[in-house]
Image 1: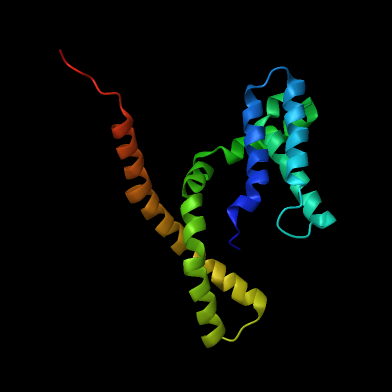
Image 2: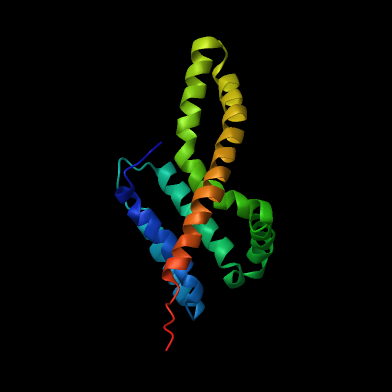
Amino acid sequence: MPTFLPMKMHVFAAGMLLAGALWMKPNRRAYLAFVIATLLVLIPIGGAMTVLHQAVRVCLVALFFGLVHVDRLPRVMAGIARPVGAFLGNRFCHHLGELSFGAYLIHLLVMLPVIGTLIQNYPMTDPSRWAVTLIITVPIVYALAWVGYNFIELQGQKAGKALSRPKTISA
């Protein structure tokens, strides 16, 4: 569900810290960044934090650290993380990542009317409604996200690059 983004800044900072640790030498500094990121996500901002919430957040930080810093992991752990990272880095997952922000912005605009229509017109169990909603919503959301990405986002990037190009002055 939508959230007030400033209340998630500590989680964002934790992710940025994990990414920034890529350039940290020696390895112990990167592990210190991991510890700080873990502490950041445990800050109980935005409501009650149960032990389950805390455990999930710590696991996500550890997972992201392992995927981003696979070369710093012990050999056994790196052997597990490397194929997962390779899969997530493939072309298909890269394209899904490019579309993810657009999908995030669009999904409720599509999903809520689909659910409303199903509730009003088609009596079914909750799991069935969930599955039908997913089957209808995902293709529409990603098609719209693709349109937005190609015709708005990429065009804006091109314009931004053109506007930020250094000016050459001829004599």
